[in-house]
Length: 306
Image (tube, rainbow, N blue to C red; front, side, top):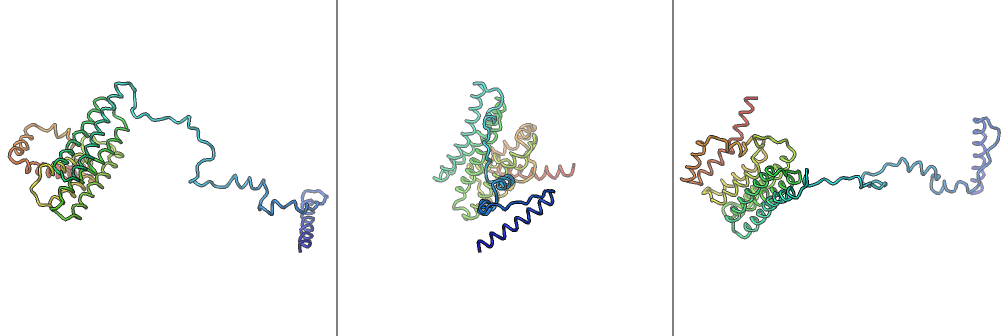
């Protein structure tokens, strides 16, 4: 069988050689190849040249890295503090970030205290978080050391202090007064909406007049003050208020910034001050409700004037 196949292949090669010779105008007959000349082709399927050509067009998987080494010498490291990097500016930059880290650590302490049952003290630590959170932004603008690093670090600290610590403190305060699933769902909504609110704030254009939704700092301040002063309302009402505040954070309603509220006429502040002297709990509840209602009112007003 092997001899017959070899003879047939030789005859085929002779015929092909004659045909090629006729096409090229040559009269020489092609001699049959050696018996083992095509062994590499039969063994591997392709010759060495053909394998090189196929390898050159084989698609490369995106999961595999480039075969050529990447030149890392041209890569530039982005400085954490843009601008002139003097010793004074670095010290100011460190002070600003120390305030951010202080807010983060105070949030962690609030969680630990809430786990130990010290709910009122944990709420006071949350209020301190709000103070340090506002302080780092004010100092960054005053010192001229605002940076993308500081903005991202502030968002991460806010998520820990206001997106996690505040719901934990509220959950600890609601223990025993409402059902555990209801309190857990309401506090989980605060954490989820705080994450959405912070992520949206990082990628959205800034408006100097209004917030798009209730900021996480203000929501945490409201929750902390609610726990600290102990509003005498039923537990189910508190759960509904916590859920409402969570949805207000991710809403598109415009809420006035604190700088605009400070510029209000002084006589408008007489009513809250007098109310706080009479009944601070009722006054606080009315202020919170009024601020939450102001968002939809401003939204309707803007739609009518548009």
